[in-house]
Image (cartoon, rainbow, N blue to C red; front, side):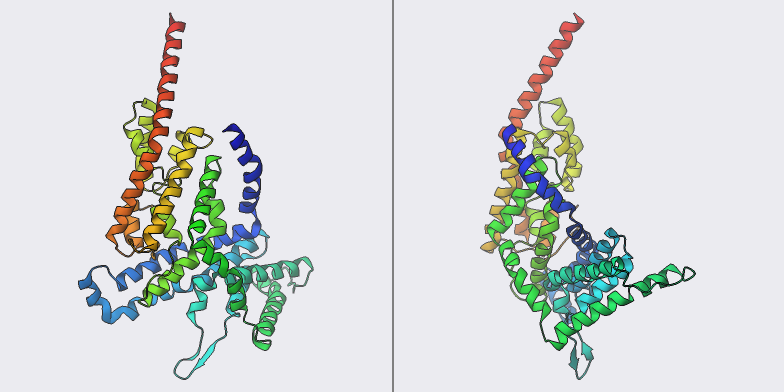
Length: 424
């Protein structure tokens, strides 16, 4: 096990740590995370429009279009919000004006969409490209816009105003030349050359989205997250940096299908992992905490009492660092195997339509059965699946827990005996 830990520390951790600290990926992560409040609240309007109770569904049916407006203008255009967030955070990391970076990023993304002339409503932009389907386009165009802004500043290709001019006005004029370059470049490529930037970028990333919806696409992130946590590295933040755009694209596909009254196409958006795999936190540790409550070891029992309430809310740092689980060969195996089993069971349960696929993003601190019920739009079988996964992971943890418990009790008795000999 020591050799294995050394291997992880020397081979896996350095590149993964560098990846999580990479400037552009960090900006992408922070920019997308900033949209989560809008995504959570906006997606709940789908439950209002399509309630799981037939009597309520019939009652709201005449008003569905009006009920869905908040969803379409929040979750439905999340890539537009994300473009500003990404541009803002990337500019901030370069010590550029973050407001200018956010504005240029959003403008660059919007320019990849061609307005359509309609007889009744004038010029309009299709919302479908501003949502999850356009997330990768938003990422690329945001990075492009900020890099142009940075290049212009480095080469002094900016309009400098006298010191007496307010800073906000000076910043606006400093972004004038970069804005002109960005707008003219995108205009020439998209409009004059008729090159569909949206379609080109989406085609490049389509294999990633497709792969993320397969069983290997489910198990690989789970494996990486648990391996990193086992070594004391926050696996969710590192893996999520790369995977979250894919998960949100899958979630948007399900939301769009639900709003259109169609079958949900995707199995593994982010709620799949949150409510059916990370029950109690990374490593599905709620089962381990339940075992600790009845431990013969005084330390483990007290740790279980301290960890149960945070665990129910999917916060498991107390047990990860308190047991500890990280760098602990006894707990590392169930910490990795348990979530992989949960991911496999849940994938096939949804693949064969035994449980509804998730399309809502409830707050992650809800107890797992409630979160799963809401995420699937009110499918009671989701609650049963969560309880099955908890039971299975508890069984997986049990022999390792008993071995660790026995070890702690033995060490405690030996410590008492040594103390008694010293006293005598």
